[in-house]
Image (cartoon, rainbow, N blue to C red; front, top):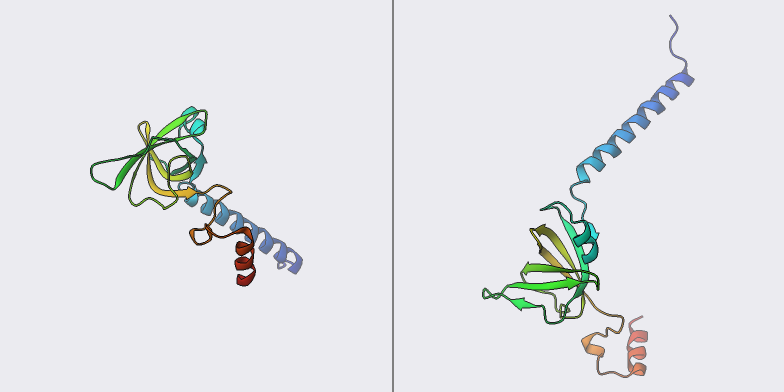
Length: 150
């Protein structure tokens, strides 16, 4: 019997390596599928809600007049809307400084019944945002400060 030729050995080794690489990729994808956090806007969340308890992100605008603090002092209820739909949200914890009515927010959490229970809030500012330190400066002073920091 003759041994396998070196050319065929390399081909077999390449096929085995390719199968191992594809297998590792599929295993990683399978392991991470439950860790993925999908992003929804209120109209998508209302139209096609995720299964109860699945980790998702909800992004939209905090509706004016909707923020209510519960008696415990750390739990708040508010409504996130996108102009087409509204979703009630409950959050327990310290809110970001930029979290105010009428501002953008991304809430990370899960649906429990009809309420979105947020574990984390990320507040967004508008395009006119200016840091507190620069709020009272003129445009020329701001340019000078920015130039000095470069």
